[in-house]
Length: 480
Image 1 (cartoon, one colour):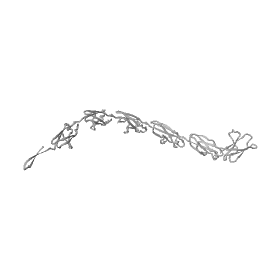
Image 2: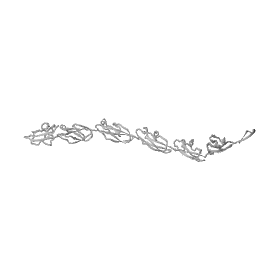
Image 3: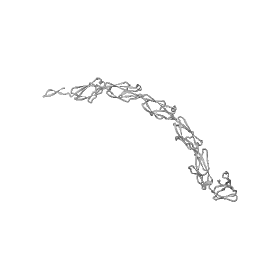
Image 4: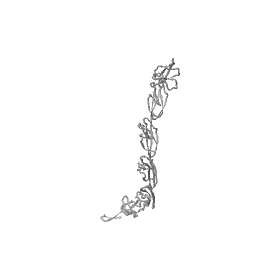
């Protein structure tokens, strides 16, 4: 309380008046325990003010309620906010204890040892990397995340969540799985010399005998590069085993070649060619290389005046040249001559197989060898010859002469007085004929009766003045 003396004039007398006035403010002081908490950052604040050190007194506070709050301190549990009451003319003292935080530890062991040698480490909650066997202490209770550093030649373990228990060390073992390797050997050596290589899972091309390391476990695909003169192997699937080298041997199969020789030379001149498996046409003696082993079909191109050989199936052997000889057979000619000329004038013609009519003397070329059928057109006044079958022989031209028989009429056959014998004959007009006689049908030689004659449309009389009473035979021979 304050005592104030005020001079007062009362009844003109000097006197003294005493006034008593109440105090309207207070103070607060906060002390923090333990000292280690203060060392680790513990402070306090009042209402909306800034941070204050332990033991600080704040004066001239308005009476009533005020809020005290606290700063966190490493390793300690931050106290909850407090509400205090400031009393007039008094200092309110507050003591706050920071309790030690409940903590635990984590220790991680990495296996196998080779993983640590290749860089394997671990960290908790994004902290610094730790070596295998290290312990991270002072961790808050509850869940924490452990991550792992890559190690060459090993599969990095997935992140783990571990639970820290108060006052205990949580031990974790992390297993780094060794990666596997792959070695591919290509045979024969000639395939490698011609460009054969391999790759795994779309990686870079590798030479025969190379080893690709640090492959993940499980299935992988091997692909092979083409090599000239060899069959490229199909892709292969291999299984990689942890910590092992998988060895694969792959064989490139040598391709084969094919050479075809055509004869005779005239067939080549006339266009003879060959092709394999419907490929490009090739000249005689050409070699087609890099054919797959096994059966292939060879076909032949037509050549004028020659029979085209039938297609052939040939077997191509790995690494060898298969030689084939194909012979074109010359096609031959056929000429048919019709006699007599009068038959031709009267419409005589001939035909071959299923073809059309052909004139006498026509030559049909490029006939296939073997049997063919000739047939004939009728001619007025002549007997049509029967069909004929002829055989076309290699290297020969076939010539056929066909005679149309004439129609001969005899009448008025009379014996004349003395040694004479008379008759009339009608021969197809336009023919030249000769009357002949013999005394015996077995004779091979007949005698002419008078000169040869040209037939007309009229009867021609004949008289044999040398006829005797003996037997005599007559015939009409068509000359042309």
